[in-house]
Amino acid sequence: MSKLFQARFATTVNDSHCLPATPLREVAFAGRSNAGKSSAINVLCNQKRLAFASKTPGRTQHINYFGLFAKDDLLAYLVDLPGYGYAAVNRETKYHWNALLSDYLQEREQLVGMVLIVDSRRGITDLDEQMIQWFVPTGKPIHILLSKCDKLNKSECKHALEAVRQQLQQYDPTLPDGTGESTRLTAQLFSSTKRIGLEEADNLVIKWLFDAETQKDEITS
Image 1 (spheres, rainbow, N blue to C red):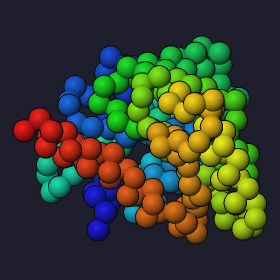
Image 2 (image 1 turned 90 degrees about the horizontal axis):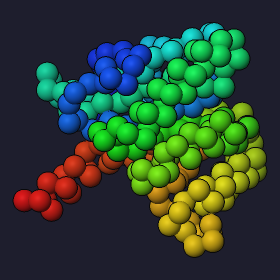
Image 3 (image 1 turned 90 degrees about the vertical axis):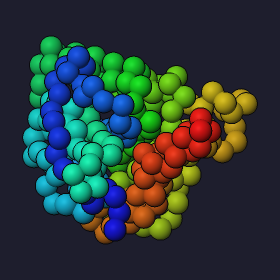
Image 4 (image 1 turned 60 degrees about the horizontal axis):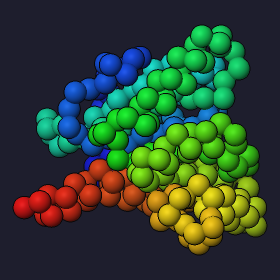
């Protein structure tokens, strides 16, 4: 059984000063409204309503923390960031969300990686690109879930994945001339409905949260 199955709601944060004051590792989930972020979190955690999928885009205005437990011991966090790309909110609210997301992604030391949910039918949008550009300078990894891939045929899936991987090369400063395969910015096909790509995504999140910590302990011991 995956460690993600033990996720429980922990807290909601609407200000960067209220983030949990713990050293526990965090993996953030980000994405446009309606890209399938809540559905991805729910299916990865094998729960139906852990993350709230609103019918109104942009309704989720806070950072939601889900704790991963072993019995009663809190081990790590999954972090559900506010969806972006909404239209039916005022300018002040948009500014607040942008500031909150930017501060969290760029300054949160406990954050070890970001899972970015991108609709496979749309590819990386301007707002997705902004999220990537906020996060890349931290040197931490980004993994893109190309959601709703069950809506595409096999050829379209292959093209969508290749296009995104090629685009990610341009954002990785470690690649000469933006060519070559990035190891820090990766992508995969994913479908919450058809449960495509679950094992790959699960393995990656678990590795970020737990394997890296083990390696760190071995180096410092």
